[in-house]
Length: 383
Image (cartoon, rainbow, N blue to C red; front, top):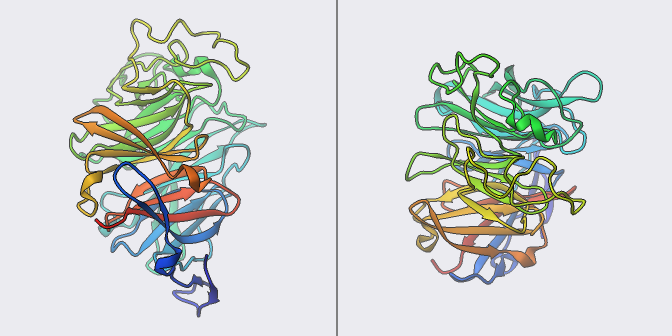
């Protein structure tokens, strides 16, 4: 779809450009609200996982799971990997994962990364750190780790690791249970938890388990399986999360302080072996929170974004979620917090959608999870 050309060095980076797509190269797909348009911005990304727009809206930071962070421009220019990125555990589902800008990026230029970090032997866990993006966009400087999942229990699975900031500037990190089911209920472990921190990694004094013996003070909520998408609701200011169930039972939740979201005691799913989850006591269990929204058949949810832009008015009050297994873009229509419609878009695209972000221009931007993954711009025709 692109014509590749070599460009001169810019800011000390070797760049590869792709000629802009013509109108004829825009793909169109049917939906309830009109034709959905898809335009490829960049290709050849190795299992891209997360993206974040830089100020101005013309450039994005994109992570590749093997451990690379790149700058991608809207005209298709792709940078060489940035220097200063931490070493990652790129095994199984691990690697370089989410990326998020500091809420005060215009002043501090801090970039947050989540990634799988090696431990002793074959064990690993999720870590989060931050570094200062250089003015020439070539490196992260003075990178420091601000959080480490403890203990490290993963053998290559269920890292979670999506991040977002709330309106007060708290950093929320969603952590998988490392495929160690009971650990999601253990408050002395970070597995299967959402943690809430100050931007420098310090623990807020009003976290629900601060001062409680045998509980990690970073924990905000627990009983999660493998969160893959987080977003701040722009209308309520509340933090939303989606997470993988096992075979069935993917969920959307609105985590509240100190609440237990059930896994593995409560689940709508079963094991991949078709046997029941050994610890499960039912779909709902007293003392745990029922899912805000649940899929009995798992679409394999991933990154997500609320739509509050003016560019496509009929998408207002929608929550968009990528689907890995279903290979679609899910659009949940909201009435307040209530889900009133569940539409599957881009089924014919034939791609595992890993991340979904709302761009400053009102388009959605998707990453496809493949050895030659793509960055796509998605909109509605004639709006």
